[in-house]
Structure formats: structure tokens, C-alpha cells
Length: 441
Image 1 (spheres, rainbow, N blue to C red):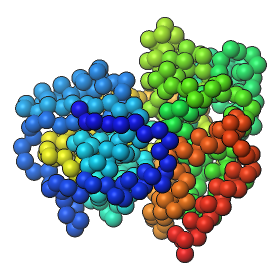
Image 2 (image 1 turned 180 degrees about the vertical axis):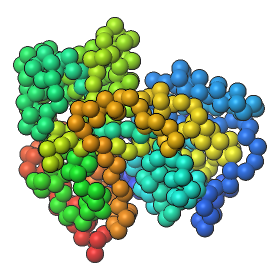
Image 3 (image 1 turned 180 degrees about the horizontal axis):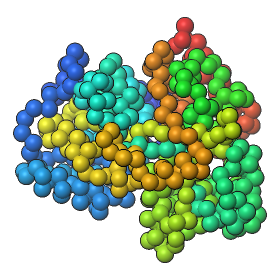
Image 4 (image 1 turned 120 degrees about the horizontal axis):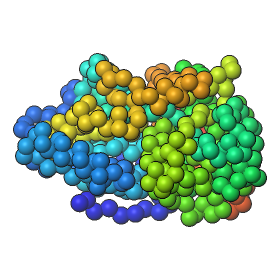
């Protein structure tokens, strides 16, 4: 097993400095920069370690997948290693050069850093001929990761609790959503919204809702916006709702004691009414409900409370990307396992996810989601301004794709840190604008 250490309060600047100065990111017999794919030649045999954030499945479902692959490829031995604090701990492992053979790419790794850590899997065209959600892992025409399944973005809710509060359909505006949470607080014993503040990573889900504006160019236009926390901007829309939820005391009493694994049965049984997550969480919460003797049918998936042109829009994209470590000493087996996992294992179907392989059908759960009037949108990545957003994130030290600045937002909203929503948004705009001016000049 790989030795890991916990990092508490690891700031964005420290993370980026660690990655920039990593000691093992180009070791081993990795592909050359002018190639199209890594060297995956050789016999498929031997041991590989697969890092995963699915700690709940390591000893059950994932262990079964390991056995299935081993049966199909005699002489192989697959070990899944669950990492609870995946973003922080695996980022640290990237810096050490020891990060398994197959892994999920941490969100903080910028696209231009992918060649340092991961083997290219093929050209964009080659991968798109077989897989969905390829663009998010492409750098300079080569793909470095494969999605394990597609997801929609929205709220996982316990509709029984919402119905008790008089709400039976998804709220259409942030104001309606806040009113719904207040009704839950007034009429039920449930915690209206659960932040999962302590684990941190669930707060990054608030960065996944640009599709609500129904603008296909938003990823290209976003880096050109010097002040994204101004009213009407997507950061204002999303972060303002989070701030108001916390400020109105519609969340757990002490965010420092939240627990991700514990939150699933709480939502499943109705002790919590809502959490902002991807559709990937629905089967997890349903399973937790079933295990606790509650009704899995109480769990539903609702869109972000914002409409454009009288219609909900929800982002649909690939979930975590899986990659082959550039430092793997068994790339042939690592690549064979990754390909098998996304095309043959049945993992996506089992998680009610959109299958990565383009020749496989969409899941029934997302058909039910669209029946509520939601248009699913796969927002294209930036082209003209490709890479600029990641550069601004580095320069500004605002971890837009992480959780540090949103944890501070929650602290201000609950009165545990100085400031107001207006003052914090002004500070974020100032820092972002300064970095944006340098990057976009």
C-alpha cells in the first residue's frame, strides 16, 4: 500500500508549488512529448495498484471487478486502494512520484501538467471515435484520461421531506429554493441543507453549474471576465446561493463536524433534505437508505434552481478521469485494466451513470431527470482561451475547482470569520482581476 499523509488546510498556492517542484513526475520509461500515445506494449500480467475515491466500494464491488479482470487476464493482480481525502492526499503523492498505476486525476492538476504525471492514451480523434467526454482530458491534441461515466449536476434530495414541507417539484429560482429550505426548517426535523464542509471536496461541486446560463461559449468567455463575482455572473449566482443558505442557518449546526460517509444515510433516511452533488451520488444515497431500512424511492435528483428561457439546464459531463501513471512500472497491464474498466466492467451502468463508450445507452435515471423538464448540456471546453482559466487560478490563488475559498465563504456566512458577502466577493473580484490582467494581456 502507498504511504500517505493527511494535509489539513493545504492552500492552493502550496498545492501548485508542490506539483511544480515534484521529484518524480517525469521518471520511468514514459512516452516522449512528440508521441501520440504511451508505450503500452508488453504482456498483460503482474501487479497493479488502482487509487480510488470510492472507499465505500473497495472491499465489495471494486474487489469483484478486480477478480473479474484477473480471471480474464490470468497472471494479473489488481489492488484497489481507497483514499478518503482523495484530492489532498493524492496531490501529495503526485509530488512524491509514487501514485500507483491507475488513478483518478485530482481536480487541482492543470491540463498543462497532465504530461508530467500521466501517459497519453491517444489522439483526440482516436479517443472520440470510441468514448464520450474526451475533451476534458485533452492537452495539445492528446487525451490523458478516460471518464468512468457521465454525470449530471444538481441536488440530491429526499423528496419525502420536501413534500412534508409542501414542495413537490424542483424550485425554479434561488429565492424559491431558499424558501423551500426554510419551509423544511419550519415544518420538519430535517437539516435542510448539508454542506459537507469538513471533507471539503463536496464544496467544489458548486463550481459545476455553468450550464445553467445556457451559454455554449461560457468556458471560453469565463477567463475574459475580470470580475466573475458581479451580480449576473455564474460565480455570483452559485456562491451567493451557498452563502445565503449558510447565513440563514439552513445547514448543519457545526460544519466542522460534517462527515461525507455519514451524510449518505442521513440524507437517505430524511435527517437531511438536500446536498449539491452529481447524479453519481444518487445510487450511493439510495443504497444507504436501503441499508438503513428507509425507502430508496425517496431519493431524487433535482436541477440547480435557475432557469434560462423558462427552462432548466443541467451540465452533463464526464465524472472523474482515470489515467495511467507515467511512473507505473507495469503500463501494459495498467492500460489494459483502464480500457477494460470503462468498456467491459459494467461499472457505469451499476452506478446509473452515462457509459463512457459511445455504443452504450443512457441510463434510465437520467431519462427520469429530463422528464422534469431539464435540458442536459455538455458544455464545450475552452478553445480560444484554453488553459487561461487554470493560469488565472494559479496566479490569483483562488482554488476555483477546490474547496478552500468556499470554506472561507461558509465561515464568513456563519459568522466564524470577518466580512460580509459583499466584502468577500469584492476581494475575490480584486484578486481574480489582477491575475486575469496578467494572464490575458
